[in-house]
Length: 199
Image (tube, rainbow, N blue to C red; front, top):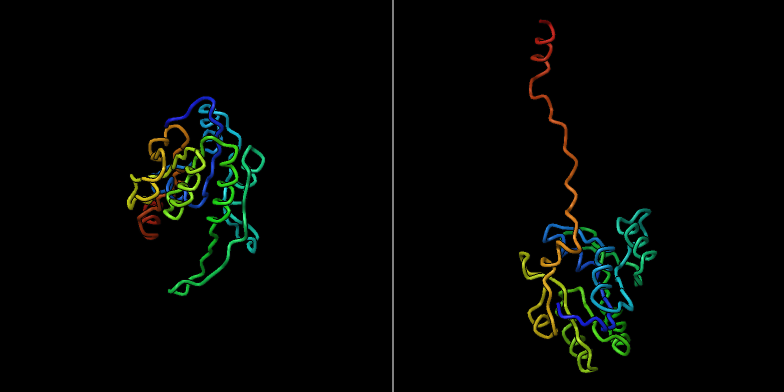
């Protein structure tokens, strides 16, 4: 990554997109390490994290992460997720944050020198171009090393720098937690176990 020590940096994290990319690569993001890494690379002026939250559920699995980020140096941008039914009749949730990311990036382009977008969404190509016209550099962080690749070729080509998330795995990642081992059931039948107990 090409950063200058005097660069004023702003991070824009598309939460759902980054989560999917990291999951496809087999690790979880350690957001404290992520923040620390970019503080080393320049003057970090803002780190935005964007996500939609299902506010109708009593418990949302993303809520603990959102709360932690909010208290630990990130600017949270959230909105309620919308429920819809897919073609197979299953309930799904949608919460597109593209407009919020675009507005914030264009505003921060007035004060930041280098903007880092954590998303591979090709819809952001025009946004990156608009920010570059303001004389700012843009780095895109996503991955081409997953199957399928998680970033658009158009976005990758438009960015000043492209960083594959896989290359950052050892720096900002932690291994995914393995599921707890299940006890191995005794394969013998009840009659066989009772017979063993008699002797």
